[in-house]
Length: 130
Image (cartoon, rainbow, N blue to C red; front, side, top):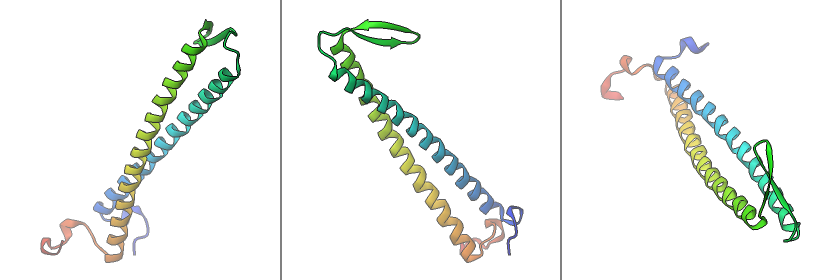
């Protein structure tokens, strides 16, 4: 019976490391998605505030450490463009997340099958039965 990681066959260790890498990548993607979602929420709040402002009101925006006067319509367009880019990025991250999850499931399945079948390193097996 395998007591710890050192007792695992090298092929299983390799798959386990790949699985751990997939989980780390998944955490990174989830962190990035959360950051982007927060950015999107801020844009939506700004957009809502702009909609509530009269068309003839002065509008200012932050440009780094500086606040500058801007045209309301141009600013609305800028926000809309940023939101569209964020949506594209979120879609891309969702695709990436799905791919990572699928690969991780495959690795888990392979490890379970190997554990269930009691497989060892491929070099210890007869190639006719692999």
